[in-house]
Each structure stands twice: as C-alpha cells, then as structure tokens.
Length: 142
Image (cartoon, rainbow, N blue to C red; front, side, top):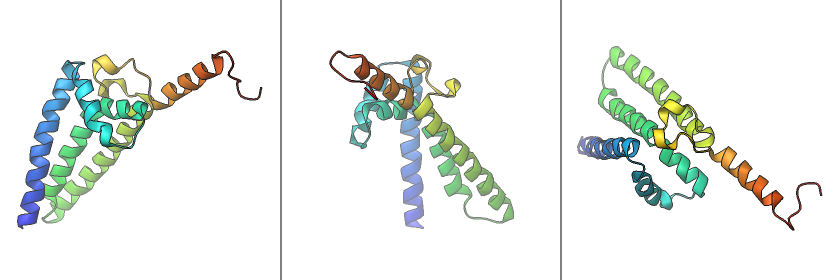
C-alpha cells in the first residue's frame, strides 16, 4: 500500500509541475528553451527533441490519464470499463503525440508559436536537400 501511495504521489506532484510548465510553454515561447534543455538527457537529435517539446501538452494529458488509471485500477466491473476507456484514450493520445513529433499535426495540439515549425521528417528532408544543393556535394545518383 505504501508503494502505491508513493507512486501515486510521485505522479500527482510530477503532473502538477508538468501541467504548470505546459501552460507556460503555451503562452511564452522562451519556455521552449527550458524544455529543450531538460530533454537533452534523451538520446534524440535536435529535431526530435524539438518535437517532444511541441508535444508537451499531449504528454501532460496522457500522464493525467495514467493517474486516472492508478486511481480507478481497483474496483468492480464499472471500474473495469473506466480503465478500458482510459487505456484507449491513452493509446489515441500516444498516437497523436507521435504525429506531433514526426509531422507537427494536428495543429490545435501544438503551442501557437510552434505551429509553423516542421516535423522531424520535414526538417530532415529539408536538411538533406540543403546538403545536396551545396557546391562540391554530389546529389543522389550523380
């Protein structure tokens, strides 16, 4: 029981902090640098790291779904349906988060000041095209 309360407390405190930071990110473009610095521990390139920052709002909603799972995980058949619906919502949110990171869509889930940024695929494609246009660099098949 103590472990359960500890895990639940960890998620609650962490989610309150992340919710606060996600609201800040939504309003202030300078907070994106804070997030990027926090995510440097992840083994991701700069494009993917920026995508993770763009998807912070979805991450927060997903983590609140995990808290709901922890709270509703013990109970009868009604709780079983709550858990099932919550798991489905978490899976849809995870798919949405991957779409924001890779393609930067749907735009409504991205902070307004980050909506014009390319997703990971578009940024890498643009970087490859730029490298092929530089003098002295051969393009594919040349």
